[in-house]
Image (cartoon, rainbow, N blue to C red):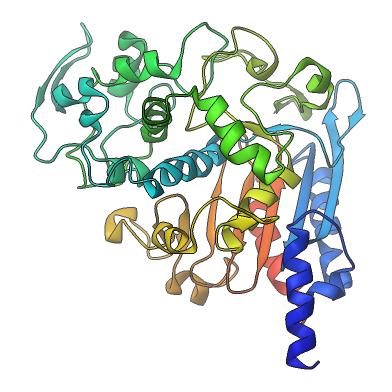
Length: 419
């Protein structure tokens, strides 16, 4: 194909912005090989490893595969639909980081500014020193370096989680402080929870380790403070509406509630609705609907999330609307955490986990620079800038069942590239 014809085709495909489906061959993908994704899902369902899944694949800005498999709710027998709405949990983090970088582009702050400059309560936050489990009391030592916005973006601030933290001391301290973990139906706000979070000690000195936690919730509150708007309003006006992400929100409106997929777990070889634990799984459609978690709160569809990822592959613009500069995208995709990640296969930028050269040699994860993450309810995604591919795999399950689809879908999408 002549170079001029190829460039013209590429421009057409980018203009589709992961919206309009086209024949896979138009985007250099094999229809026969993409059909292996059908087998992946039907095999996992037959083995009772998942109740169902929605899979979307896009390349060069056009959707080449978008299907639903299995049931949304085994009790009712409702079949999954490819436009169903899922709790995307930690897939929210990249969206929050994007909002932060949008404000950074406006020169509202520097990435190495202390967060206490905007949320003064963090000026007193220290690192855990001693802990008494009987009284759930503790002492701290001062931080050597203040927590910065960069630390929060890269999970190196020392802030952990509460109820899902691997350290029982932090689970108890978060509960005592009244910090909201992940989701809630209670009438609280992200600002109230973050102010309480600032009273809990850190796992470690800022910048010295990678600790997954509520740093992006802190940054959601920062967005509210700097922009002067509630976090949900900022995202809707500045990101979701411009990107055409019409089904992405913290809470699902009543007229779309029937599209929300229930969270299920496997009990005695049957998939049943997950019970209320430290959160009510129905938080997106009931309760106060006032808590806008920047780390875990959003609901979305495969198509909507693909549009968000496509914006990054397009160097920050989509449908003629620029969200971020390509220079900012380049900064976001730079490795930030060095050896702190603890694995040669991954590093972390300012919004996503990043695939390394070592991981490409291992195989099945994409080319170096592929950005990726997942969610608490077993959803996964990746976007490969070199190959122009996007993969989104949405499920709503809790508990381990030996589900192999998280690694399989990456291998199968890479193997379907045919140009």
